[in-house]
Amino acid sequence: MVVLQAIRKALKGQAKRIMLHLGTNASVEMIEMKLEDAFGNIASRDSILSYFFLAEQKETESIAEWGLRLEEMLLQARRKTAINASEKEDILKRKF
Image (cartoon, rainbow, N blue to C red; front, top):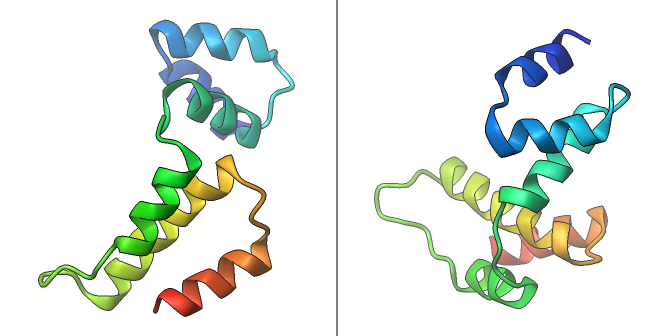
């Protein structure tokens, strides 16, 4: 409840207007999805997956940082595709 109140107070402008349309019963997940739809990555599913499969570890990047970056890319692709949780884990394992 406190998190929702903090989110509502922090949003301004268009984000605030989007929040108002969700109503007072909106969960954090609902807010996140709505804001991601409005302001998130507009790349296509194919380009996000392509970017994921072509990604390489940077010289200055630890394995943990690289893993987190890969997981974030796959999360973005998952929002636009029907990749389920087990497929996500398999794809990450193959990439490593």
